Length: 588
Image (cartoon, rainbow, N blue to C red; front, top):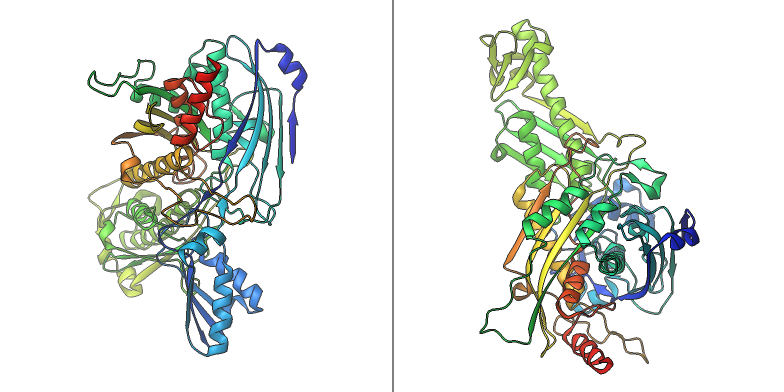
């Protein structure tokens, strides 16, 4: 796939500095704590599936289609899930196989993949080779970007496109991007926390860092010079909001950017070198319809929220309860949630693409507001006042004109007769002619042991433009989790295939390294940037994916700052560090 705008030759001719470099990113495996699997049971022609999934309705649709069943005959329940990161956005073959076995046996069947099978068949972030040629003026203006990427999605199509950030993240009039997929007899690519974007960031943000150094400009200042005001990739439509510049400035302030990193103590190993680096990012999606929610307000003041969205460990149920609480004034502890069951809950798309809060919380707010409208109408009849003059205040309906005129919600006769009101809410479309995107900027400090090759991330600040933060604890934990993902991508995670047979050689947790608590910096912080997004009724944008996109490239730039070596191929393992240092020494 090729995208072009402007005139590349003209852009490079205008540049004072032109750089060209190739980058390679590793194949990453999802390795969720909970393996993939299903429990299935038939009741005559009806099939019930308990699935480890990020989207019960997606599984329902696929299984019904594969088995030739009406959708109404397939019920999928997915209340809890122990990690998916994109690999559980769709139905797996194991679910269909389990259903066929259960039908033949006349008994329920439980079928879960082994740990090794998840490495081989659960999907991956495909490896990419990316070639970038870019030019910039001495004042920091980026004049041209030529970006070419190829990836290996296994034996299946899709999953290798990485070029979106190259055409969108920084202002540039002359751009050409190209994506290509190369089929291999290996595991398939699957959506993996910001699919395509960490690979793009690894290349693009190292190139931007190199351009800044080549013209003698601070990397943050160069990026601030090129913050886009419109979506260049999508016909120059305006963003609903963009907090990228604030992420850069406030993140830099929180990190102490521009001050020299504190040198190791005099007693420390002299082989240890410190460096700092940063990177910016955009995530390509911002949520939208469809989503439906139902809120039931009972006469005793308790609430039931019914929605189809999965809670994939991100605190979805907590956040949605808080939205209902804010709209109705009901304490969170009095709100009960039913979710992720195609037999009893409302339709929602799978929880992926950082869409759950911006897609589903507006539907929840709309359903709660529908309840409030009905209660106000009942109170207006009781108080003989216009609905527009009433407001819900805690457990009472109060007149805005004469506060002495009020009635307790529980005392409204019509409400007592009805016993509950039911509100239905739908996700409205995003504003027409505008695009919704979250942004971020990450800042890293590292130590590189030049004797052992070990890289340690000692300090990290992540500034995130994700719109309004509904719950700071879940927001922070999402960001910290994204940092962990980025550390794995930058430092250790890599699928290793045998050159002769194509067999994966490290399909286990012993040989496939993922970050542990020992790899995460104790000193890490988040900066929440709220630019007042107006794309939906909760003013929210996603955080799950933009929280991991620039982490790896920020670390790579920090390693360069520490030892003066540009690690274009990831991950930055001790072996690669020692090899590159030996090559640098040999060159003199």
